[in-house]
Length: 145
Image (cartoon, rainbow, N blue to C red):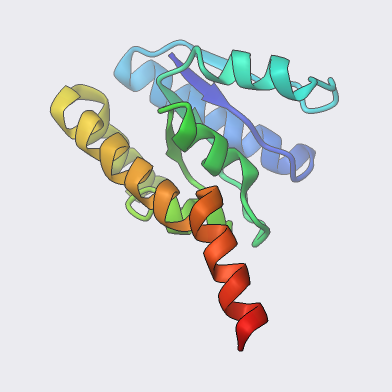
């Protein structure tokens, strides 16, 4: 199953949905579309996200990237986006070019070993960039300079 999420307005939602739908049809995946007007508390959101194998999140914003971080921790492969979280944690899929995303999806969706390696590498990056210990150390370094 693949999940789709987009929060940047109706036109981007429709574009994201159509792209995810085309991947679902092409590669025989069920696509679930999140109505971003419906509020989910964090626990419900994480519970829902954890049920999926992939998330399609073509976020064109340059923000922090909460969804790519949550996806990594839940071992849900994240496709798309230009946020810091996507670029740092999912460099091979942090793109918004649909042709390249389709290419990456083609290889990842069929290859369990590649999926496992991708998740393992991403979890290492989570520890490197987002662990409490590393964040605390970086803050201490800033304060000591």
